Length: 171
Image (cartoon, rainbow, N blue to C red; front, side):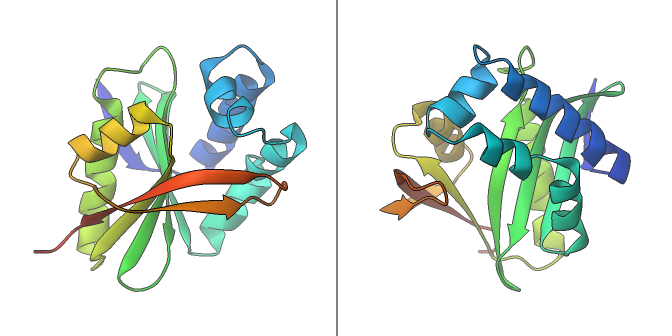
């Protein structure tokens, strides 16, 4: 049975290690969909997913990590970033192979939404690559509405076409 909860310090450490292991395997779906697809330099990814980077993000009070656990194993995670008192961004939601297509992403999202509602968040935003059809279908299935398209300049010097979705948490 999979449970979802806010990540502990130990979870953050384990999550960093697990994600970085997937990134080392250039053939993995995680690497292909999160690094190769966006032409992200590997050093940038390693630094972004390093334990101290994730720990600092949590300590700042702006980022919250959630883990999906089957027993002691992290099978997925989500990260939110506080934009202001009423808006939070779902920065990442990842389910690790072979746990995909089992409702874990939806369970993570529902937990995040419930927590955000409790603290008064009114809008949750999420960005997806314009051609990330699987991610876009997931957000649309879960009530997110497409609000705009944009092209951004990345910190590693590439342009990426994104779509922005919003989910209203209050009526």
